[in-house]
Length: 201
Image (spheres, rainbow, N blue to C red):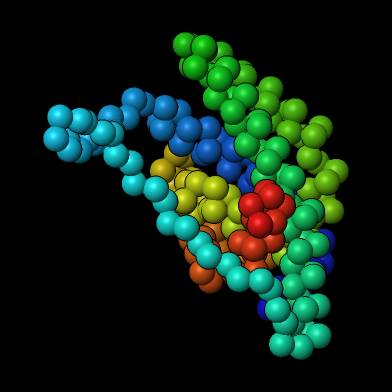
């Protein structure tokens, strides 16, 4: 069972967070290709079709005992702390994505990424130093939720397998795995809390 002690290797949290941002940027760049929608013809009319993603139905949260409610409240506190990081990460990688599209030279791209890494040092270093192990695990889950890929797979695909192995080994020392694939049905409380924060519920 994970404990809520401060992360003992705070540079690990900062560096892992930046690795995630790089992978998300690469994923976003690959996703910006044109997409042709399938069509269906009814009589003389042609209609584009689109398959909507699965909809998760969550009922009103009830608790069987005070202990379960206490655990839920603790999860909610942790998600509330971590969620802004996920939102900020999205804003940062969109900025990186936009700028990288305009940079043609590989050397200039590396300089830009180093600049962004320095900005992350200033922006997140103090906060990530105080991030607990449990909150770090939740952050990885939220990344998997946003991308549809585990953090391990993101690093493997957009960086290299060796880096993925290294970061997963480091996270295993803290009690969780980067191979985790988000499942809304298994993470009903987390999904409920995130959707509440997003104003969906």
